[in-house]
Image (cartoon, rainbow, N blue to C red; front, side, top):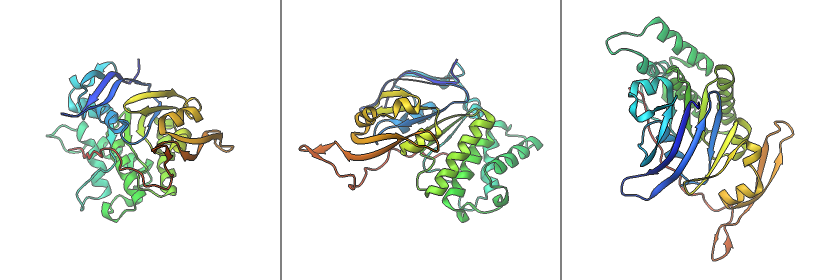
Amino acid sequence: MPTLSAEHLTLAYRRGAVVVRDLVLRVAQGEIVTLVGPNGSGKSTILRTLARLMRPQEGAVYLDGKAIHRMSTRKVAQMLAILPQNPIAPDDLTVRDLVARGRFARQAWWRASSRHDREVVDWALAVTGLSDLAERRLTTLSGGERQRAWIALALAQEPRILLLDEPTTFLDISHQLDVMALLQQLNAETHLSIVMVLHDLNQAARFSHRLVALRDGEVVASGTPAEVMTDEVLRDVFQVEGVVTIDPHTQAPVFTPLQSVRGTNGRSKSLSEPATQGEDQGRYLPG
């Protein structure tokens, strides 16, 4: 039985057009699955529905075989954590204070933090490399440090599944690699299931067990990075002509885009033209 599954989901916003049609997605325990696709393909909407932040128009999401919308918020938060694109927190919060909020889902409202709570917070700080920054204000951290603090918050929930929407957005390449390596390490050492949205196809191929390529709310291809990262699939999904090779160091497929095949009046769009704005950016802070 998959630990998290979406069965024939149709997703739509109020008074809006259908965003995702008849989606079937199953995630095994310990698997890293990455959703890829152009802006507007429904990636963030799917992630929000998997996290029970949005109800499907049709179909259902199941967590350990149970319909997620029939489970209590507390129970879901004990099993699943989500990190949206632009999470926000009070300016005066310290790193430790932020991470400690991840324990809310496992604490009774009348009970103070236990020894186990403090141990979990210390572990989350240590595994994300933030122990020395625990008493620093969030506003004094770099972008990469802040992102690791939010991941530590999610880990403090002790989830079995972690959902992330563009976890490397706005980070420089060094911090991007740090975050991706951290997620890979957590997956290997704790058997944490990870479902994330990424725009960087090469990072998705390098750090994922499975890719799900979406276009216009439908799955075009799903499989290993080698099965999905093909010239034909990427042209179909992204409307970009390119070449797929194998990285000699990581053995992961690498896509080199050459030119867009999507244009107006038959004209290919230049790769130098600005990208469209990203999908909806949820904000979430436990408690």
